[in-house]
Length: 82
Image (cartoon, rainbow, N blue to C red):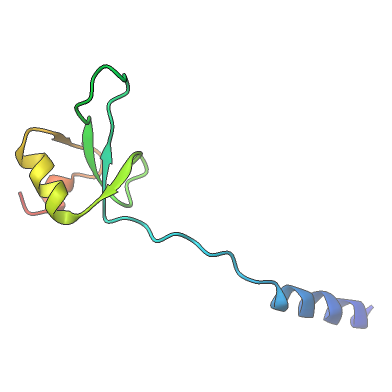
């Protein structure tokens, strides 16, 4: 039994660890309807409600300054110092 445990532990140690994509710092959530092209929200990258595409800090600032709302949950405006 100990031999089997050792074999299983060795196999587990040799298994490659999954590669995870880095988490974005900021996310721009698109509009729900295709007809409305204006994005809905800017999110912090770690926001559980964040869906959309990754954007840079400068793009997040520009979006917030141009009237796109910040998420009420993660408050990217506060995180960006606005």
